Amino acid sequence: GNSVTQMEGPVTLSEEAFLTINCTYTATGYPSLFWYVQYPGEGLQLLLKATKADDKGSNKGFEATYRKETTSFHLEKGSVQVSDSAVYFCALTGDTGRRALTFGSGTRLQVQP
Amino acid sequence: DAGVIQSPRHEVTEMGQEVTLRCKPISGHNSLFWYRQTMMRGLELLIYFNNNVPIDDSGMPEDRFSAKMPNASFSTLKIQPSEPRDSAVYFCASSRDSPEAFFGQGTRLTVV
Image 1 (cartoon, each protein chain N blue to C red):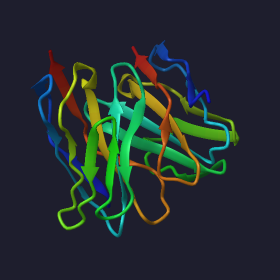
Image 2 (image 1 turned 90 degrees about the vertical axis):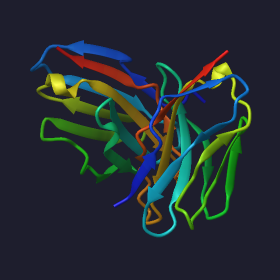
Image 3 (image 1 turned 30 degrees about the vertical axis):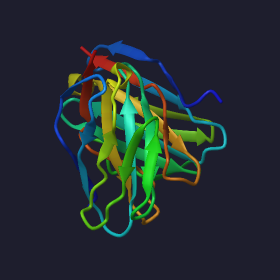
Image 4 (image 1 turned 60 degrees about the vertical axis):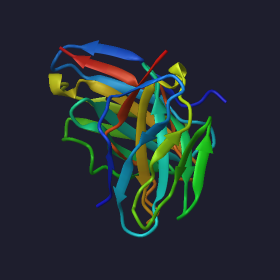
């Protein structure tokens, strides 16, 4: 079945530091890949997505590239802000028409001023 | 657009009581999902509907859990009887012919 593996947190960075959160997946065919963000006390918000190999999703300074050869979708940001503190989830949907998301375990990011 | 609306936001109930969680998806969306979030198990899919029909309920923990979608604008998740291990945050999400899902703010359930 489908699965997503994320690096464990928490990740603690200083403001303006470079961020990488690793994500690898196992799936048959060509899944769509997502990063969702969850701020304290809130639901999940879609941060970015990529639907085919070599696509780069980007939003709010965050980027992730769909790498089929390494089955990875690592999240990066060049300069984090305190407001980026949240939990980040990598997720996928399969290519068989089943639209439910399979999530990774989530990575908590804490950015210190 | 109001987004996905869930109610209540918080629910505290005693073990053995019936609990009903409610969800209003985004207008025009044809898929609806119920997820459960716990520290131990992360985010798990419980059930999802397409065009009001349950497609996959393999994530429903046991017979104490049931979900309905009587029309395109409303869904319920019911737990009867509730147990302390059901304590979690329950999320509803919806989508329209797309893998991108929009989530509600969740219902935090505490069973004491």
